[in-house]
Amino acid sequence: MERRSFLTSAATGFALTTLPDWFSARAEAAEAEAQAARPRRVAANDKIRIGLIGAGGSKGGFRQGLGDARNIASRPGVECVAVCDVDLKHLQEASEVFEGSKKYVDFRYLLDRTDIDAVVIGTPDHWHAVIAGMAMRKGKDVYCEKPMTLTIGEGQQLVKLAKDNGTVWQTGSQQRSDARFRLACELVRNGRIGQVKKVIAHLPGGSRGSNFQVTEAPDDFLFDMWLGPAPETPYIKERTHGSFRHWFDYSGGMMTDWGAHHLDISQWGLGMDKSGPVKIKSTGTAQPADAEKRSFEAFLEYEVTYTYANGVELLATDKGENGVTFEGEDGRWIFVSRGRIAASDPKLLTDPLPKSAERLYVSDNHAQNFVDGIRTRKQPICNVEVGHRSASVCHLGNLSLRLGGRELTWDPKKETFKDDAEANGMINRKMRGGWTV
Image 1 (cartoon, helix red, strand yellow):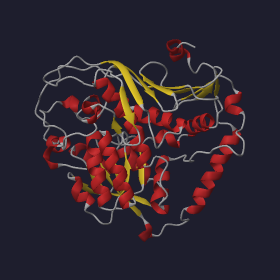
Image 2: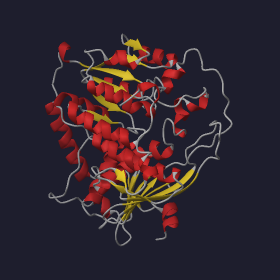
Image 3: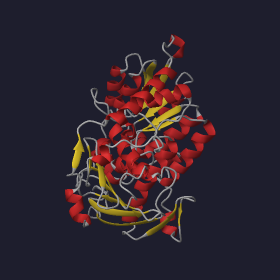
């Protein structure tokens, strides 16, 4: 099928409304094993105490920052004892959610506390690596929102630090704890669609925004601390909070925001959690250049083609239904999203896998999986290397786009570009104010 027609017609085949019994039974058995390994009763001195750094999100939400901490603290035997944010409104809201917690505007004082076992990092992306590095050196376990890093180099450093410090790490790419995505990846990994030919990660497009006004930062928002390691710039409201994702100083647009979900699943289905593509090329439409940097920077439209050493292609595109499509032989395909899983033939989904089939890590609750890891020291489903490798795919796509779409040759073992000094110079970034990972 032609690629463009496939992008618009994919996932119109058979869809499951519930997961097949043979698959659900295994998940139930895995949960029973995990439950048996947890303490049946948690004594007062056996509490896991967490601190929240970056408290964005609504009181009722279970999304980044505040929502992550609420979800984790709702697990038996877990308590959030400290909250930190440079937006004093967010800080107050978090302290009301976690009654009795101590408030901080500088995360370093929170990390100095010896009674905190783990931290939840829900800050904008440009802060993730700095805070996580310091937390690991202080002996804390880490739940870090996705994308794990702002650059590939930061991920390299965090992987080493986690290994050196024995850190239990969970990246907030929670689709790995969604049974639909696990089913799709297990089927693909076990040859259900034959040899994989192509994977298509359907992501959202970028957002338009320009001519934003420079104003004074609100009195209850510590803007210079919010910038932290990022370049100094005048305050523009649209650079902060939810829209920070559209500026390269702080994030990578939809390529990293949603790519950290769907490109992560693509890597999982391909069995590439410890590797990555070897070729990257792209086309895209960017915001018009703005010398005063008062316009969004992330790409509006894009198609990034990644080629792996085995010849499989992964396409990241802003076209098509949000989700991931795995294409195989003889027209067979499997599509998965947060709402459903579908296939070109119902038997691809309903026929059980053999007992000898490769089985993937079972997690049906991302927060509980992290808490279990803290207690047992078993690494969670989206550990630091998984988070790094998945974020790297996102960063590779953005680097190709920002370099005019030229083809890049990547060595996933050495994690460097071949014969491209300009691209290698973008693996890391300069940090302001003496901040380091």
